[in-house]
Length: 273
Image (tube, rainbow, N blue to C red; front, side, top):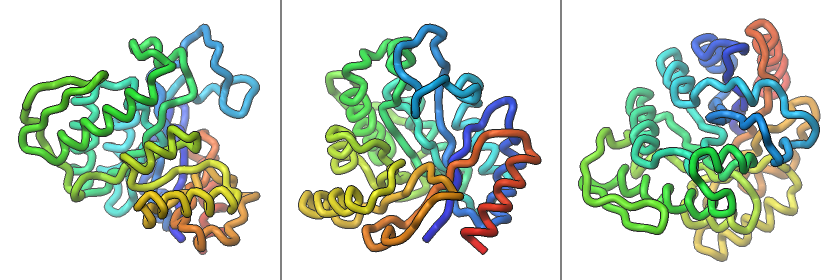
């Protein structure tokens, strides 16, 4: 089993240049950084988990800037978006950013994606919240074209561009793995059609087995699963490897350097040894 960390990067938390080496030194295999471009001041979308939205959601550093700094200060750590929100992003710029991160890191980019919970955030980017899943699917398909074709071209309902050149191409072949978040029917279809791995933030074995069986029936038997955002104090890994979970990405509360390093020490001592 591999062990990673999910951690919000903000202007008030541990610096990326400190965090990356600390993770690598303690034996973690990957860092996943969540993304929000902004949080609308007036919002009807409920916060994840309910209640008030924590302060760190309002103060996120750009995810690709964060991961580039981590790339420059590490040599082995996987560099994951956890998750990015491509439906809200320009597709050509995002393809270039992912490929550039993969290049400068020597092939360590992990592209975690989702539709996002904040409907008002999507609307501010000109995306109809009701259609953000379809927009995401098209943008993923278009990015794969950009990454893998010398002259990429795409014509869809939400993405449309004529033949073009766009470099760099990713180091990983055929392209950095796409980690799909979510467990709705639409998210699972996205995993089948566009994904290379699954991020799931609930850990009951029955659902993992059901999705594993469904993927096998759909011709995708070997998709790896990551148990995403696990509580390191309460997590039970029993049986997860049997259903194809190959990584646990532990949630770490965002905070100042001293607190985060202390927490990483405790997690590594318990789970990595």
